[in-house]
Amino acid sequence: MKIALIAHDEKKDDMVRFATAYKEILKEHELYGTGTTGTRIMEATKLNVHRFQSGPLGGDQEIGAMIAKNQMDIVLFFRDPLTAQPHEPDVSALIRLCDVYLVPLATNMGTAEVIIKGLERGDLAWREVIEKRNGEQNGNE
Ligand SMILES: O=C(CO)COP(=O)(O)O
Image 1 (cartoon, protein in one colour):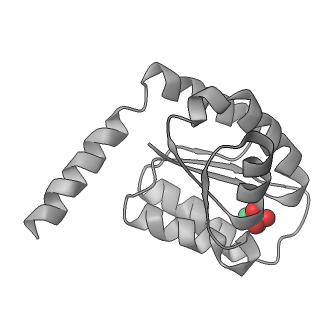
Image 2 (cartoon, helix red, strand yellow):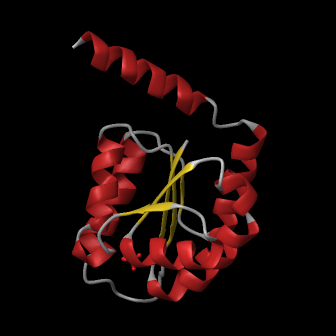
């Protein structure tokens, strides 16, 4: 599965703790992240994270583009609800696209734990069906 890991500055420590706690599950998957979050996770856990631009420089939009192509299966986005973000429109657009494409999205650590445990249990296997269907459609184009 392709998993996006994103955290606003005030939530980056939480994201590092989360990735450390669930490293054994995460290492079985393809990990993507916005620039700074990805770097922090890689340094702390040694997990391999494909890093996009930093969020304010377009990283949220790059991840959004993957979602729009149905190439992202899970988004774990630890938002800071108490700080205004200069790229708030990008944040909203990313969340909106998750809803458009039915991509499981956690915007805080509580929900992220539920998703990651569901992932381990196989609850998200339906995403593989979508991926397979996409592959067939693209092959038929
Ligand atoms: O701003 C972000 C998400 O909106 C996160 O970006 P960074 O991981 O580069 O800090």
